[in-house]
Image (cartoon, rainbow, N blue to C red; front, side):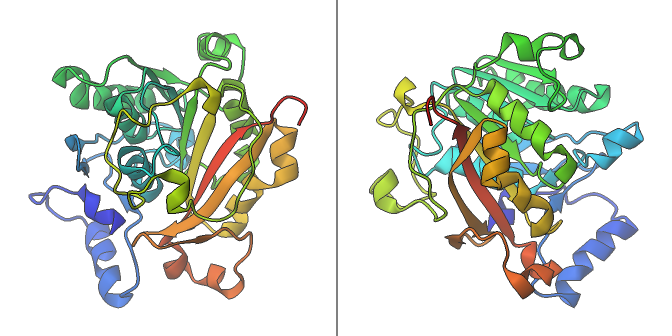
Length: 320
């Protein structure tokens, strides 16, 4: 179970919200916790390879910061961290890559990429002081103070604000500079889809043309080891010919209708991107093909919380 990788402190006095949240599993047996912790409760990600990572959560000071919901750890971040850590490889390889995380929240995925051996890691979120400072705390606690993770930077970045002085020159400096871009649970704001796509396209390195798929990766497309249990291996390093890839994962808790337009082929191409592969996975690890609409299933709020979409995105190739 995906949520088994998350541990919350046992010695805290439960709040009314905690009691209500925990009771949902009794009232609704199929319900699943899809957000973890708050500004007063630090969840721990139980990494099978790198040990426990304690994640501080931001205490939002403004209405804008609060409505971004970066002050929780979401299941999409947990799943992306799992893919980066356990594979399948080389599809989710970040070793020796330059890696950027957008809308980082806790910075979990970026830190896992750094621990795995990324050549350079830049972790970004909305440029609110408390949000960026919180990511800095997590990087310091889990990487720098332990002398691991290599070259990691933390910056504020507002999606779609590119090549301008407002972002301290980050976008201008790093244009086309990342072989891997990480995006977790950032699709619930349809009005920001184009800005997010533009940021992905801006930062991502060019990619050769490749076939697309709406099905989960097959075992023979990755390795002979079962998916999600592939240990890090120097036999699957990143090579420049692979081109840049963005991993975009999001939970369906806010509704498929809000998220699906992000992957619209025409809108993607208009912002310089193409979906190379896309599929769905639930918290138990079951995978299935991607669909824009699943009818009555999408109306079941409890059921859809268990599912996430996983997309692998690249830049449109030259002459494509």
